[in-house]
Length: 218
Image 1 (cartoon, rainbow, N blue to C red):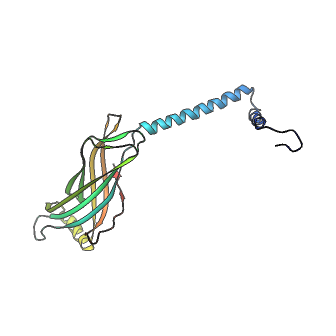
Image 2 (tube, rainbow, N blue to C red; image 1 turned 180 degrees about the vertical axis):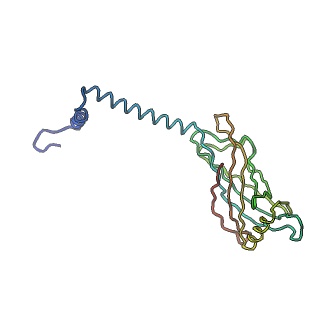
């Protein structure tokens, strides 16, 4: 801009700034080299960071997207051995947070259903060879039902079961067991996760509300 005097260009301002920054240097070219070196270091650090993010595998995340408990009761209240009758459906999401690498299941992904640490059912979620694409999520659905399944609850477990049955809400665990490979890497990684659920009995006419649960990946 001009206000009755000589106009000052933007190039002149930049030159003045550079001169002020380098006024304490022995020579101007030393300042230039220092600035260039700092820029190169910053660029290299950025490139290395991006390469690490892109090619160092990040473990998949696991969550229970939905679950419904239609039945959970003692199969025979008068039996000496504990057996459960149950009907439960679950939807488990596997999240691949990697930017470039696919997560490939190299073994079947199974889910154990536990009460008081005792397994009463096992369901398959994904087959070996299934793939979760980069930055994507795959949701696997499964249903488990039985009229009489033996389970080793013990006296403490039985007491907890009766208490929770009376309250109408059950504290269950879903334990995931599998194995994944992050392509193009060839190393196989175990996939172990624990999902802690609190489920109320649900019916077709009165479905229980469920809030998504994030699982602890071991």
